[in-house]
Image (cartoon, rainbow, N blue to C red; front, side):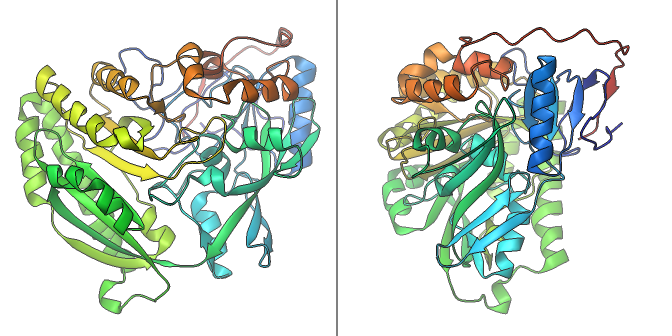
Amino acid sequence: MRPSPTISGCTSSVETRSWKAGRWTCADGDPGPGTDALDQLGTPTRIASPASEDEIAAVVRAAAERGEHVKVIGSGHSFTDIGCTDGVLVKLDRYHQMLDVDRAAMTVTAQAGITILQLSDALAHFGLAMENMGDVGYQTISGAISTATHGTGEKLRNISSQVVGATLVLADGSVLKCSETEDRAAFKAAQVSLGALGVLSTVTLRVVPAYYIRSLQQPKPVDELLDRFDELTQENDHFEFFWWPHTTWAQAITNTRTLEAPATALLRKGFGSYVSDILLENHTFGLIQRAAQVNRRWIPRLAGFTARTMSRKEMTDRSDRIFANERLVRFAEMEYAVPRSELVQAVRDIRGMIERTGFLVSFPVEVRSVAPDDIPLSPAYGRETGYIAVHVFNKFEYAPYFKEVEAIMNSHGGRPHWGKLHFQTAETLRPRYPLWDEFIAVRDRLDPERRFGNDYLERVLGAGKAKEVRPRAKRTTAARRVKTKS
């Protein structure tokens, strides 16, 4: 049952699930057994779907009067419980318009509920595009910014770095406007905020002229890719690879930016492309995972089969259509940012750990790189950064494998992706972020009562509060357990 999209929402207790049914998002973020890797559970008192900034402010003020927490949920892509709450759950699916295009400044302003694909489509009408993006398009821009979502590119930074201005609805319902020149401390904190400062209402992003991507995917020996990683990342606008554990092979992806329209032979074709790129690849991969579920000992042979069937593929299309992929097989994911100089050895350490422990891993390891930035809670803060992501099919237990990987990441100075699974706490994270205390100071100023707090933020940012949130008023309506579809 899906709650009515009204500002007052529902008054019953609700069991929330990912808002994207059928997708592979929202794994169990509790560092426990982790065998389901699909759902995050929360018990919001009501669900609100505001359609304007004034309505967002009204929701927050009403929650403050009741002494309730407030938490925004985006598209449900995060694997952690970052979007769960015991108070008011705010959905921004009715707040998703592009508001302004400034061609002189090369910026656009949009409401925070717009998805990356919606924004990309709107930008294309003006001959514009995002500087860079990750491989998921249905994320809301607010969720992508709040968790430091990134793509790949040695000279390109994450999506948060594209933000040049923002407005936040604060804990008392007031609206704060911030930028590099207006309350800079709040702005830098808001660029990667984990939703801890307020409700991100509008964002202004730096954009670029529209461009195409010429993409080449081909199998390569993983040792060759590791040996040449510096060279490959410097030679290509975007480079990444997926290594299949239990094999010596990886799928290398090089994406080259171009302003030239693609030749017909290289242009992806609507439905035909969907069938080949999405249905066949995803369902074949899904069958392999289900075969592994029947007998885990088949995994090395299945990995070898997958590696042998990888083929060379070239295509050219609009940038967002190349970057964003649809993934239909559900999984749990952990991703770490390590110093760029540590990346290759960290991948080799993971390979050695799998061989040593005998873990049977049916999903590939993804390797990317990004440029450094100056955002306090960005995993790429202050250093050239390599990203390493590991995955586990949702029917398998993830915790033992992920904990071994995390130990390796710790030894290489790793910082976890905020929207993906990890076992860190504020105590272990604080030393890894030089501007940690500056972020906490902004949080203390903007949300002293921790109106926007939840269990995840208490775990990763600490339990300290400037003021306690008042106990919720006793509800007179009997609670009903309602299961919502995403």
